[in-house]
Length: 105
Image (cartoon, rainbow, N blue to C red; front, side, top):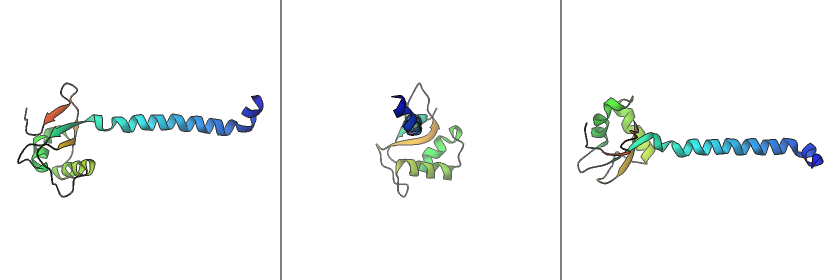
């Protein structure tokens, strides 16, 4: 066993460090969507209305907000449909993880 460690210690350490960093990266990536709330689109709503409804809860301009939502949700040309669930860049409220887009407080 000592001879194996002497010959392959660098490879063993490299493998161990790689596994640790992979695990940390996976945990970080898996939790990224959980940081934001999910809204359900209602009839007649647009991304711009959602940006206005949540303006006080995000630090983006309306343009940046709409661009972020399009990119993160795979939306082309601002086309959203009733019943769609979108992740928006507003910190999640642990008491209420899913909210309706038209709901104002």
